[in-house]
Length: 134
Image 1 (cartoon, rainbow, N blue to C red):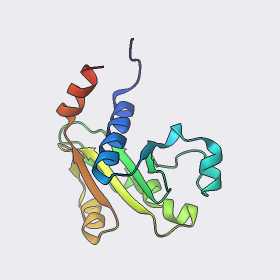
Image 2 (cartoon, helix red, strand yellow; image 1 turned 90 degrees about the vertical axis):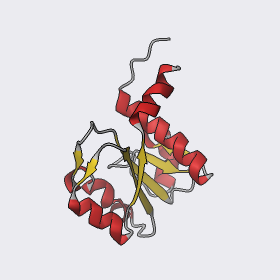
Image 3 (cartoon, rainbow, N blue to C red; image 1 turned 45 degrees about the horizontal axis):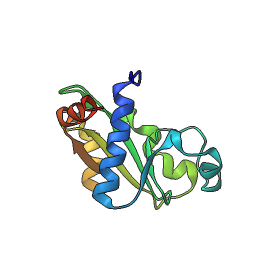
């Protein structure tokens, strides 16, 4: 079988599997969820920055597959960070999953330090080895 999928998209699935194992609760790639589930939970049909979400719609995740030393800025997370306001659920848990060789801008570091965003890093080499097995 030939894979035509974009590597960052595959990284989203890899991150969903990682979080499912780590937190022992199911996580799904947002675009794969049925629209009726999103609507009944009060979420938009289009992701608005959400890449992964848990089965209870309480934990949302943004995934960034950046090159070595690529820096993640506030602008690339702003819609995601506004999701609690957009959906009217201020108690949402927000997580950033990124490659461990990417860098964080000082604004993002401050958001993490405050506890408003959880930061999870994954090894891109391990991820690439896992998809080569497919």
